[in-house]
Image (cartoon, rainbow, N blue to C red; front, side, top):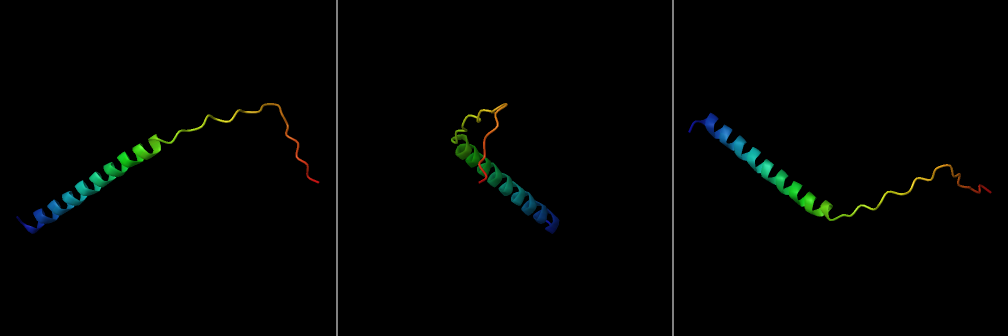
Length: 55
């Protein structure tokens, strides 16, 4: 194998390793954030002014 082929093979190996790590992290995030339950949105108060005592 020539030097150029070795460099290309190493580059492809690095890309494959990077992709595998990224996919592993993505799966971990799906597991972690999939378990987090989002609360219902807060109700919107229309037409109500809240009093704020500034004294």
